[in-house]
Figure (tube, helix red, strand yellow):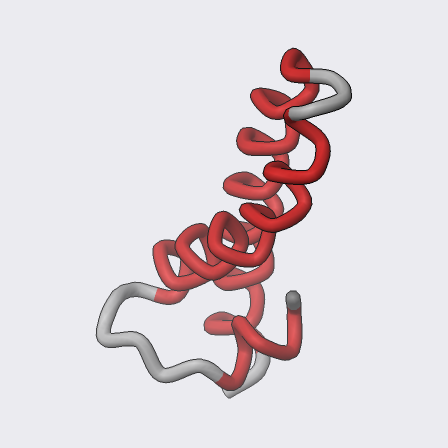
Length: 64
């Protein structure tokens, strides 16, 4: 996820780009997990958003 976030060229702020890509990359896993344990999708959604935003923020700040 970090490589995809750092090399993507979305026309939004770096942290928003990370959040968007983090959520998009987590959707297939969430689809597989929802059949087995529907309650675990919410923490996965939250953590993907937070971690993607952090990766995007730090990539934008230090990788340029």
